[in-house]
Length: 255
Length: 237
Image (cartoon, rainbow over all chains, first blue to last red; front, side, top):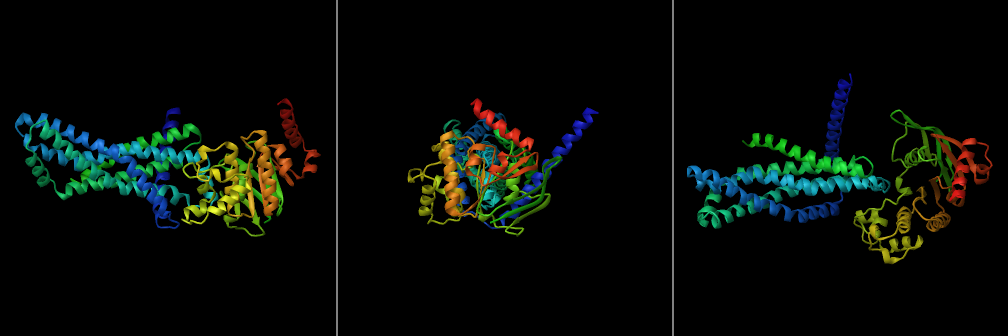
């Protein structure tokens, strides 16, 4: 009886959480077109997110490209197909690794910060203070963060793609002895717009997922230090899982 | 502004927090709502401020059902200052987010009114003391020149000297600006010093109401126990 009861409770909690999240997403789109808009806040968050994330995504890009070139060489040289390495590097980065790795890194870097900041504001009554000051707290806290990250992610992925290809180029030319011109020509000629576009679409969706999940967890966090910790952990874990799940479905669409 | 509360009730699930509350907050007077922690004081304050909705009953603001909350100011228990903004941006928050540039003199006046000076204008809340934070929060609450100021446990977390400073400031500001004040507290000393009218809340019910004199002479056992408990605690200290 206990087992059935606990299964029932878990199912109810999951359904309740999904409903609450759906309502939260609906509220985001509702307030997106409803004044007041805090433009200065939007710009501030976009700049903040952009500047703080560049070093991390640059490192992600360069090392992913370098490892990809080395690992591809290990496999492809066994059946004399090492000339395909530039194609493999650019295709894997733009279509798959770029958006997914950027999404996971940004979830850890920006998503956790968003959840922790909003949860702390909730615990210390700062969100109540916003309400008493007649401020649309949703447009002040959630909208700038979601918009900023959703718009910044395609730029991040473009940077990761470019730096990753350059990482692959460095390893291929200076470690594996590829001809530098041939490498670049193969990369540019093989890459089609749809490869890049599919990565950008994925990144945009991931940016929305990270920001909305992080804001949701922050805004509905439990009270106290435990609440802030749980909100941060839940934000990162849930957005990382959703990135992997949505990645599959988006890949199916662009397949 | 006068606030009249009639048969007000509020439930959270099975928890009946406020039961049939009737009270009047008189215009230009300082009303104190006393009670133990968890008796429903904060919920009552949030209902009056229109931050949450009541289940039953009425709240009338100068005989009207709705009021613009710009006419209210609230001093939070722990200040609730915005960490990421400077003291000036905190005080002039509504002007700051509306991109108005000319709030400098207004902020300096507000700082002076709470006994602070320009030194902290560009500092962040983490760079000032607890007593100063409370005064900055008070400056933010009065910045928009509200008709009613709500004070949520104004002396919590302060040492006796700073508590006294805050009490004096509250009295001075209320009198000078001819504001109506509503304070929720369990600090008897502070309540007696700043209040005109008192309502004692217990388990979601108004147990007793009146002036300071009436309250101290009250035959209500729960109120007497509460007052004696506080006195005993103070003697032991």
